[in-house]
Image 1 (tube, rainbow, N blue to C red):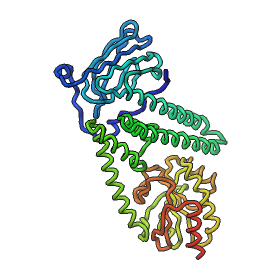
Image 2: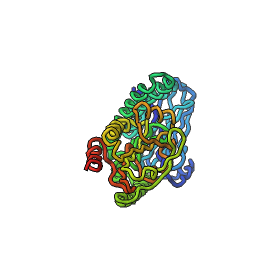
Image 3: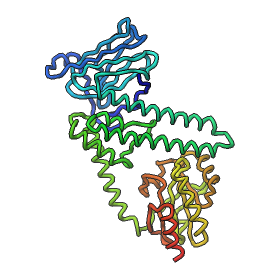
Image 4: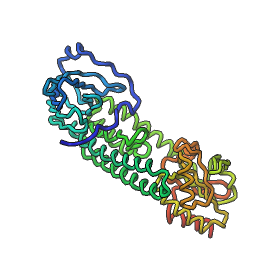
Length: 398
């Protein structure tokens, strides 16, 4: 048996959709073209317990059947099915298993009333794929939960800054590994609707494994293969609409990006650590390195080392650095500034990605760097490491 958790998702609640009408028993009984699907199960210590099967609809779970286990915990659910669909099997106080069922399958389920994470299932290849994905997902979530617990327990420790950096590294490692696993899963099982679950999985509320802005190629791949094989599914059609919209937004943004170099950098005002306000235009007359970052991003913390070198080499040559933090915790932001000795202008609205200047500059990832000339015009962007230092050397020493 495999110990695992149910993925935290309801696919069609994560994307906009139309309503779905509840199916009645009378309507099912009149269907003659559907295929009978059978779910046979045994729930250990589940004698007399109710078991409910629901189809995952566009905005709601659609009841299929509720049955009572016999004394031995056995149950049987038979229902008419006309196309492949996602279902949720519920039992006990909180047990729920996500299934991907093809019409006509005869499925055998064996679970335990008191341990909702342990079950076996045969006769449903799609459901087995979901079980494998859920097992890997649970491992990642458990590891992230451990990191979150250590962070809470040590937030008041005098060694917290060093520990926080280690935990950030671990966090990035875990999420990157699961991201790569999910990409492999999608490509290895591209003929199955199960890849929708991999596409819409979450690390937590508002924290998706794949984002349509930064992972659009993954969305496009899933859309392309499922539209060929499963365009009858509403979830697939809704994904297709989402991909078309994301592509349009990306194309619009790319067209806008072509106009930025050589134009005046948009001005903005934000707050220093002491609460006073500062505008980008306050630095007019200097070459400005505008850097978007956050203390919670390990990549940003690494790139800060480049900025420290830049300040040391060019700080006396009408060169200024302005960092805009996408933090939402003032203490974390200030601690990072002090720990890494970021001795230049720092501002933040402490609104994370809701910071207005994010939209103003089209920032969709961090670190993100923009070079601005003394007249306030954008010179170049997306320069990092040695490439950034070489560019600054050209501008300031030649």
